[in-house]
Image 1 (cartoon, one colour):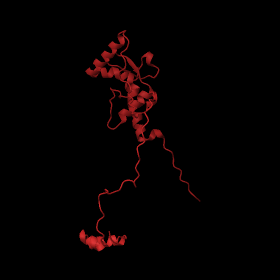
Image 2 (cartoon, one colour; image 1 turned 30 degrees about the vertical axis):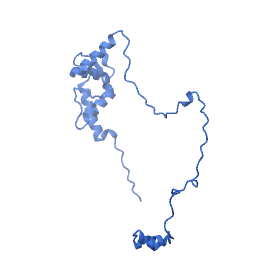
Image 3 (cartoon, rainbow, N blue to C red; image 1 turned 135 degrees about the vertical axis):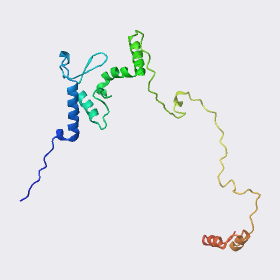
Image 4 (cartoon, rainbow, N blue to C red; image 1 turned 60 degrees about the vertical axis):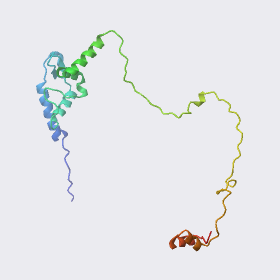
Amino acid sequence: MFDLFVQKKSDPSELPLNIELSAQIKLLQNRYACNKPACLTSGYCYVLPDSNTHFTLTHQHLSVWGAALAAKPPIVTLERPPNHKEFDELSAHLLSDTSPLIQHRLAECNNLNKQSAPPAPNTSSATFHFNLPNDVLNFLQPTVPHPPVEQAHVMNSTDTPLLPVSTHPGPDLSLADFCAMFELSPEIQAKLFDNGYTGT
């Protein structure tokens, strides 16, 4: 009656990126297969060019390197491993081969390590800044009694007039006379009248 459509799950190894990654790992395995008896733990080693020292390549190393090779465009080569934490131990040797600045810095570090003097203090430390109000530490100061302050007479708003006492009230004018005296427009006179003003 009903035809059920069943979608077949695809195998993750058949995905295009995984196929490319597997191909790159296979290239690395072919290139770095090692038959040295001490290196049989994984069977793959990167041999340092200057010292013939073997650096064991684990599956994690091969996966990281293969992913860097599979990137478009590739960010590493078959001869140079990626700059990745998995290769930190190896990076010091490889970088010192190419950069005079890094060679000099590594030589300084080695000289410091060889000296028996105590290590130099670490000058790069965290700095914390706190902004505190001025009176936050007042509780540490002894309290000094203040001399009594005489109570000044507090004046109410009714005690002081708005206008000086020497002023006299103006003339008693109607709203029309007031607007004519100060040359106010009829619109303003109408607004004053609408708001309840009838004169001075």
